[in-house]
Length: 76
Image 1 (cartoon, one colour):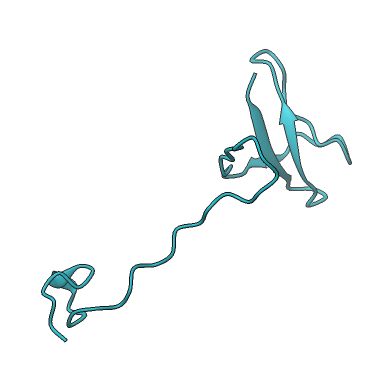
Image 2 (image 1 turned 90 degrees about the vertical axis):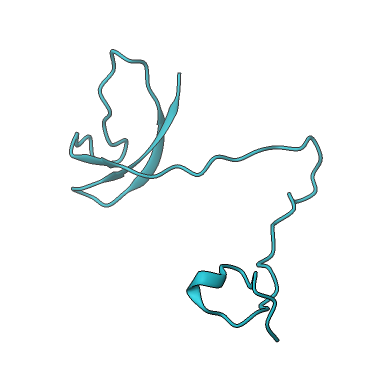
């Protein structure tokens, strides 16, 4: 059973629901069925209490022209 994130159009409450395929989503705050499904961000757990590493942006190199991508031309 997937967990879905919703925002209620009537009371603006944001919440998550665990739904079976035969169930209809309903706002737990006001009971409305006028909901917008939100974009969910997957989370991975690494088994420790440490934060997961976050990728940093590559260093700005090259001429910056769009055809060079991330500085592939290697111009100073």
